[in-house]
Amino acid sequence: MGGLARKATIVDQVKAEGYNPIIVDAGNLFFKNSKAQVGVTNDINKINADIILESFNSIGCNAFSPGENDFSNGLDYILGLDKKATFPFVSANILNARNNLIFNPYVIVNRDNIKIAFIGLSSIFYNSEIAILDPIISLSNIIDKVRSESDLVVLLFNANEEDIIRLQSSNIDIDLVVRSKSKQRSNDGGKKRLPVYSCGDRGKYVYRLDLKLSQSGLEMTDITSQNNIIANAQKRLERMKKGNDDINLKEFYRDDEQMLNRISGYEKQLETALYKLNNANNTIELTPYELDKTVIDKYEVLKIVDKGKEKIALIKGPQMPDTNGRLPGDPHHGHNH
Image 1 (spheres, rainbow, N blue to C red):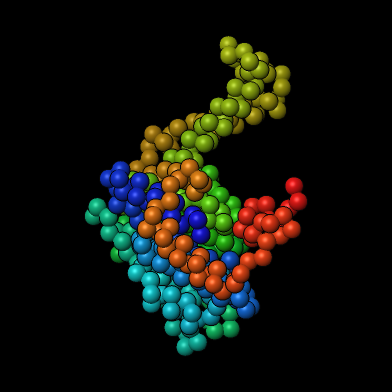
Image 2 (cartoon, rainbow, N blue to C red):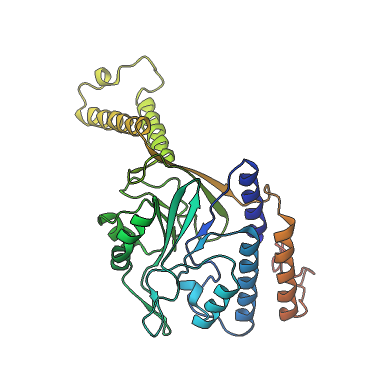
């Protein structure tokens, strides 16, 4: 919950730089579990969901793709959240009992005469009230239409690993993926066909992606990824010099075929990465922000969070101190040191 007010501060900082950011979320936003909890726990979870929704309404959001956990309290509940939201829910493969899409499959956002499409998608999961179609097939069925209406296509994907592999192996024409359902925090978009970004599962980070588009339809080059490749290759080549910068590596290791192959490999990585940077048309650059205590909470959103916490406190009732007189919530509650 504490990250929401800090996220709002980061968004305000970006706006202060003169940008009009597009804010999106790829799912598993409202609940931590795929099944509803019982009793008081679930009442608290619903208040937390309301806090998140109201905070997102305040911060702003351009597209949200519901994931498995977001349906944990049933279809009617998430439809209620959708009704109260000031931002669009999108999903191209989640259907109701009448086999109709519950939400619009995508939304198009206009920025600086560039049309950016955000498609919602989820890997298959079980829920008795809804049906989830195969995500890759569903994406294939709409991609031509979406591509014809936009300059850039972004997939918001609540994805398991298998479906990410399937997507990378396909020839589906999208530009990048923002992913949930992953504990991994991306350092960049990776080295595969499509850049994929995930910021972990605990809400401790918010990711900023700076996109520059010069020509629609051309490959997106991840500047951060190429710079990481260059830094890694240079670091390994430097290690091989063993502190002597004047060494000619290929001459020094001329009798070691294995080392020569490694040197050639790193030099090829450097060459390829530099070529991509120098010839990039459309680029992405990643900046992660850790939502720690160094980020000041935005008062308006912190007020929403604190108001929700007051409701939770009423549900929990009086809190009993431990044997050391510490209340729950104290970081040392239950500890004897």
